[in-house]
Length: 471
Ligand code: 5AD
Ligand code: SF4
Image (cartoon, rainbow, N blue to C red):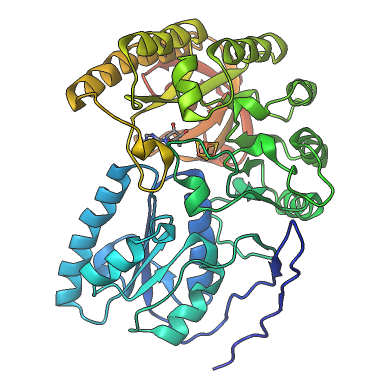
C-alpha cells in the first residue's frame, strides 16, 4: 500500500515546534465498510470529529448512524468532568457486548480522555477489546494507525506540543455553517480545568492560514463561520509576531461571509478593541459566550480566573451598552472547594444583575492533576445539588424572559435544515443564537430570511417566514 510522503518539517522555534503537512492517507482498502462515530463534549470535539470522518472516509469507509451496522466504531471523548468519563465507559460496555457478537468490529477511542495521564493505560488494561487509542494531538495519524495497526493495540497519544496542523481535511457536517479553529490548547490554567493538560498549551494558527480557510469557505457558499478556540480572546499572543483577536476578527469580517461568530471568550482577555470591532461590523453576530464560573471574587481567585465580580460586571455592562441587542450566555460552576453560602449568594447576585440569555451550569468535578482537585472539598453533594437547582431556577427565569421578549418581533434567521420536531417546518438561528422552528418553504434552507416570532418555549422560539404573508 502507498503511504504518502510525510513532510514533518519540525522547526524547533520558540512558538511553533512543527508544521505537519496533511498526513491523511488515501486508500480504498476499506471500501464498502461502514463506520459509526459518537462525539462527546464541546464544539472543539465536534469539529475534530469532522476531521476524523474525513480521515476514515479517505480509507473507503462510509458513515452509518446505527452502531450495529458499523465495522468501525469511533468514540470521540471528553474529559472535562467526571460524568463525561462515566458516559464513555457506559458506552464502552455496549461496544464490548457488540464485539462479542461481531469480533471483526474495530473499536477506536479518541479525543480528550486518552490525552490524560493514566487513562490510556487504564483503557488498555481494563478494556482490551479496544483496538485503537488516539488523542486529540494525533488525529492526523489516525488513518495510518488504522491501516498499520489493525487489530493491534498501538498508541501514540502524547505527541509533541506545539504542533499546528495545516491543510487539514474536514468532512463538514453542514454546507451552511462551518467551524474554523483559530487556536489549539489553552494557557490560562484555571485551577479546576483539565483542558491545558489534555489539549496542551496555547498554539495559535497564523492569521493568513485562517483567512485563507475562511475565504475558501466563502467561495464554497458558506453563510456562517464560527471561530473556535478555548480562549479566542488570547488569540495571537503566542505567535512569533503577536497580533490580537480584534485584528483577526476584523479581517475575517472583511472577507464578507454573512455571519461571523466566535467561542469561547475569557473575560480577562476581552479588550475594548474587541467590543469596538464587534459593534462596528454587521456581520459579526451580537452573541457572546462569556463564562462567569463564579460570582464570588474570593472563589474566582481560588479558581485562578484573574478577574473580580466587579470587573466582570463592568465588562458585561460595557458589552450591553456598546453592542446593540447583544445576547450573552455563560458557564457557571457551583460547589467549588470552600464555596460558602455567601460565595454562592454572590453568584446568584451576578446572575440576577446580568439576566443572561442562557447558562450552562455545572457541579464542580475534581479532575486528577489539577490544583483544585487537591483543595479541601467539604461540601456535601446534596448541598451542591441544591445550589445547582437554585441557580438553574434563576437562570431559566431570565432566559425565558429573554425568549418571551422576541414574541411579535421580526428577526433575521439563518435557515439551516428541516426541523427535527416537525418535518413540515425548518429550523435556524437568530443573530443572537436563538433556535427558531419556522413555518417556511424548504427552499429557504441556506438563506437568511425575516421571521415573525409567534411563540417562545424554554429553549427555542416558534415563528413564520415573514414573506409568506405577502404571497
Ligand atoms: N468541574 C465542573 N465544571 C467544569 N468546567 C470545566 N472544568 C470543570 C470542572 N472540573 C466547566 C466550566 C467551563 C465549561 C466548559 O465546563 O464552566 O467553562
Ligand atoms: Fe479551562 Fe480556563 Fe482554559 Fe477555559 S480558560 S479552557 S476554563 S483553563
